[in-house]
Image (cartoon, rainbow over all chains, first blue to last red; front, side, top):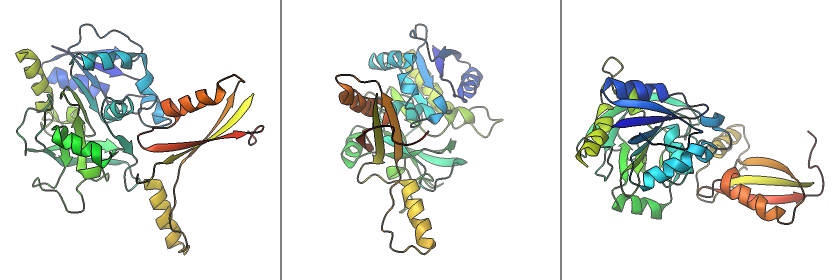
Length: 230
Length: 85
């Protein structure tokens, strides 16, 4: 089981993912954005950062990187793909996940550790029971997820809403718990099969207990266990 | 050489955080008559003459310059250079 972490020009969280994977004892390597071959990798991570300077829209240019055509094929074959922050933005731009990102409601870049509720979902990257509240840092300017009502209903019905911003006790505030204004407090979603998962929070930053917690570990462990079981 | 101006704006019903903030700021400056503000992008293209020029410019908008999930765009063909610089 080997993770491949894609490096786009402007990625800046790829080393965090590599360090987190190694901390958990997993094999991991980098993938260059110009590569067109993912042979040897069992799971692909699109890391956080500011690919192509966030020009035009976040993720809009990165989705046309040569490697992305291969990431799409990899996902279509059922290969697990994780998009973190800018990686999530790239997945929506590539239409691998529905919806789009707007600027944060207050126009502020938000950098804080937030509570998130794990929703009942088909996501293959989830290893804790639905209802669990995890604390993971967010670090973004465009995390205000938006989706039309019809698509949201489809996401809900298909168990594709994976993570929601919530209050520390797991409830959702009447006016919304998302610090960025995300529609319906959505922080992470997956595709119908559950192998492609995009989330704004950074689980790789809460893997080593010396760095703020361990709530991010379960996501990486879950996919490794699932791949081992297949 | 043809010149195109492209105006990208959020679709109706999509919340526009910069626009909403500008509307609040204008209101606090005393411009109570402002009912809404929408902020978008202006893109200017210079394109070599070709048979299916406009079709290709539309394609550029659909593929890259706008995100059809949340944005609309308007293409205006300009007579000559649209502005200095």
